[in-house]
Length: 623
Image 1 (cartoon, rainbow, N blue to C red):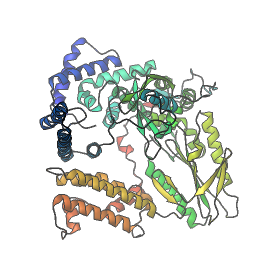
Image 2: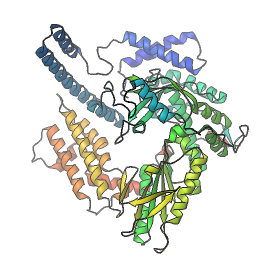
Image 3: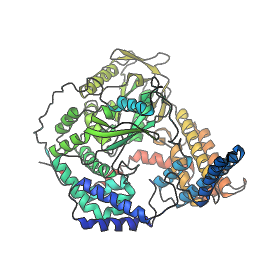
Image 4: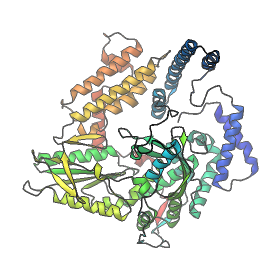
């Protein structure tokens, strides 16, 4: 989210202080109501001529908007067409100028990313989405209800009795210490995203933080002690999945937009669970997704190391990718409670998580169309900072049981099998492990998506490897995509580098379009955009493929350098004869080769950025 206007912050803080005459806050909902009242009071005194969806709207745009209205009253079609053209031209001009000015003021990566994203402007939400297949004659509301019930509602058989392995009265080996202001502040700094039904944004909470921090921490500890999640009302936005058929329910991804105050509480608890679980060994070294010290690039790097080493030794190797179907909404309460109690998580936190997962009131939204309100009996909402770590706890047994062969990132499971001899059968251990994982997931109320199983075999020559998972045959492919990294059966990096170079050049073109506005982008903003949009896109997972001295992927890298040079010359109005090294030096940019070498060194050191953010004292201690 973009930052608040500077003059809005003191007004909002004063409005909240004025509302405090009502006395001490006694509940989280009362806190939310007071913040909403302060925001409404502040908006009454802060007048703006901009429309909410058009921050670049001004008096000239308003005048241009009136011309088509007057033309329609006169009934002249030519005047209507010309007035609309003038309106669209004015809006396009103002849009570029506004976002170029905003980019020049950007102070960091998140601001720049949001600026470029909003400047490009995805499809307008007011446009009517295509009808769902089989529901063409139904209304928009009925179609939205069908998508929401398909994606969010538990499938038939999900409520069959599940025998609990632990008692609700069993106390774990960990005792709960009170949540601290430092923990909540750390969660608040990471909080981003759109506001929930109450309209409160993370930036507004940060503005009020010095005045409301003590009350928020006290309310969180009270709610955890009572085992109640205070604010669960949610709007579920249905976002189309890239490359999927959006005429089918599975072509949409449900994103939960809940109260920012509730997300702040969830992020605080998620931080405690993640750091405690990492220190106590709840997760295997190859488990990532909401877990500190391990990320997607680490898993890619470890996978490529295993495959390259096996190939150098001449051992046939295969890797299998599996995906948990509809992972977060399919999570069940009873298996979650059993997993948490087996790990010794305090009973108060278990009950609070149970309240978080059950009976969530949601209202689905697709574009500008709203569906009917639903009560979701159980599941993890996508978009909550707590959902990834809870799902990691739910399937953590898989990582612990097969720690040497299985890597997990959120709902993606990878299994690697290395044969000792070429004469062995085609990966029998891989097949057994895959079937055991499916059984273990089924015991927790989850299942894999057979259509997403992918197998890659190395050192098999022209012979295709085949395994059978629950009666369905999986045949090896020439290449697979693991966490955004393309791996082929020859273990060449060129396909991945080529794809990343194309995305990097697209990012450079987007910056170029933004710089075409009147006034353009300042050199500082262009340099920042290249560092946070272009270079990271090109060098994603370079720790796994770049080695100094190799030249097999120099062509796509050189093409990206040419695109950046063209961007700099066009935006800075430099001649083609200007040396590229001089331009990069003046802009504060290091050569791409130096950027890649830096990533290679970081990958070898395997730095752990979470170590610097961990609090010095333990909040949960062994009893």
